[in-house]
Length: 431
Image (tube, helix red, strand yellow):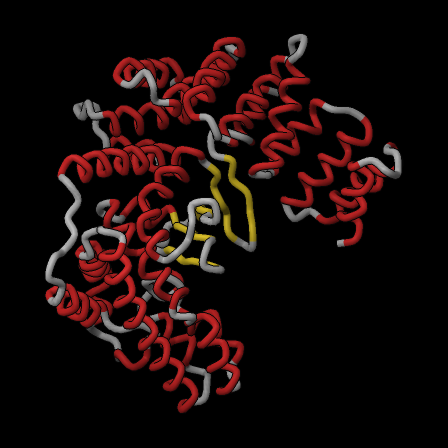
């Protein structure tokens, strides 16, 4: 059972939402939040309202929905050159929100009677959906010529305005706006050859070369370009490298990890990536050695203890795993994913009091940051109606409506009509 759980619910708690695979990870979410909060505040978004979603996808992409929900693709995180460039990407996306472009373009498309083109015309992120700068023209080819050109021109104008707003937000946030140029130059290196062969009037964003020139012209007019202290930049870059190392360690194959982080590299980021990759490959002894090295270097880093807890769990050393997770929680404070991991180990160890503690942790996670695994654990450590309701929620979050309703019906049969489980099961049955 333990090996099965390792396969199903390893470090990343991934689930599907709206067709996208999302990854929950406390360390990465907090790191991204810290990077983008300056521009979020400049856009009048408080940290309490901001929500980060990590999309498991190799596209060089990010987008903002509703002004407060920020979706960042793992492809962007692994490829973007530095945290200031990432901040500039989000500033651009916030520029769309501030400008009301999503609402405006929907109205414009209604007027042009081509509603079916909305997703492609929006051009989510800095690139056309899928990262292919030729895709927009191909998709649009079937629409009427006048409406098509009107919409494409409108979309390009909105991209230009969002670029301008990104520079303004970066300056307002006391961040160096040249991060936007870094992004555009990276995009040019990735897709410049393709862009040189396409008609600039057949895509839904300006050519990258134009965006670079526009940004440089606007930034050149700024009298005092904000430049954070070198110590601040160095610390931010180091933290960002740890974020990237973690993603690469978990998402790339072993060969790519070692290519990017050879054993001759003794940096924290390299050891972190290799330890994670070794754990995934089943070389737990080497993974543990690397993790213990990191803990010796940084005894107050909660996420190294979290990794140690993962490794000990796979060793079957439940007691040591619990100790490591508890230490991680004591240092990290609000960390739903670590609470979930600890609850999972307790449910597996099943010593006196473990089920109660696992139930407490799972319920806390469900209140703060509900995820399928938390419901699955709760179902495992509770009984009767409560257990069936938790399984109903688990299947409901995973999009299995039939199984969700079966468990919801069973939960109602086993629960009192005024109980929370009965009422919440009824909500599932109504869907």
